[in-house]
Image (cartoon, rainbow, N blue to C red; front, side, top):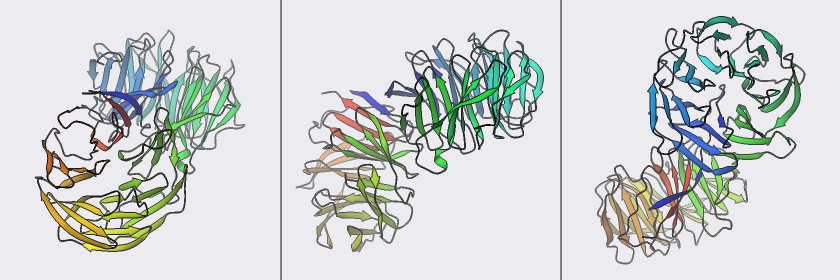
Length: 591
């Protein structure tokens, strides 16, 4: 049996030029956001307490807690809205498809009986409100001609609905049943977000025209706007009210977050500008925000969260992040104290994690190229992308030095480092075995078969090469000379991964035909076979000789979409990385 100990959650899926939605439950300090086909839930006061809802068939776009906190409504790019229980087995209560295209925003009515959604679609199906238990519609929503980016319910009676979108309009609806009352034509660009104050007396719109306008909550008439003094210099993507309805938080493409004081007459004056830590460039544009209790949460285009204290805004913000794309590789440093690990994704992001703490920072390479293959020690990173180059990058703490590159004559499909000789690396391409000493190519051995994977022993004297034909070829390495010693045949599909055990007494291999095999290194005979427990190709494996061969633990649904990195932190702790961009730490129970 395996128990999930920690989850290093992914960041929200972001898109340049679009705001993203953060939902919050003030009672439990929980936030929710969307990434891929998952809805991620994490607590601000306990960042490692994170979990994912993974039942959507299409990329998720928005999730909202019901007013009583017992239900969650989530929607996706196909227009599907699912209402499900937040606790227990998270059973599905209802499923609807209110609009024909992507759902961009969703809100519950304050009594928890109705849901309004807005987004993209055909004809008039850009906004819909319905009873969440039966799906019956509760009004007609005319007035928009283009994608509707945001909507909101008035939190007090009499109920009202407001919407805004890409047609530069904000619309005001009375009900229920809801009907069009009037349009607001005060903006000159996309209206990105519209939000009612918690007391229902006002609502605010923010736009790509860099303005924030404030309206009377009961009539929809304009009563004020955010001051031009200290205003944003870029598109404003999101806005969130303080719990007392006296302030708002806005975020913008100008990379700043601002807190505004809202007076009774509706005018907004700048209280302070919050400076968010970042990595530089467009990734620091702020695209989402949430004001929850004492927490001011902002999210950047690059996926970095900054959490400020509303009562002490001068306090340094808490920052954390996650992967935006598939986590494709892991590197563990079990001897480090505290125990640390690195994870990478193909978009070139390298993140550091500290077991028991979580996010430990991002390693910024001066040449931030895509990453296909990755291996690391505590002092050095070795990476390759989708060209012929291998980069060796020195690391000092969280800082990366100048990279040295080597052209290996083909696109690498595996990188291996000899742990006892860290200057020595073995690189394989589809048709060659390449030896590197530091950043110099010392040997290139052409082969007549197609290479798919490889591994090198810690002392650098032996290499195992897996091929498309399902065979393992063992090579001895002496200086710059690579000599074939043996050919092992057992697999029935292309070899996908090879790994030595920690004591180097055995090695394991796996193939695309779902089978894993353990081999004795000395005799080169099969030690454990018929491990056909997966239902798809084996992407990665880790080897621990202390586990008895007869014991087997299955972790179902470890990662949505598949697992791409795996490693033992110790005899009873397993770390995995997956297509859902999350990193998870599992405790294995003694058999």
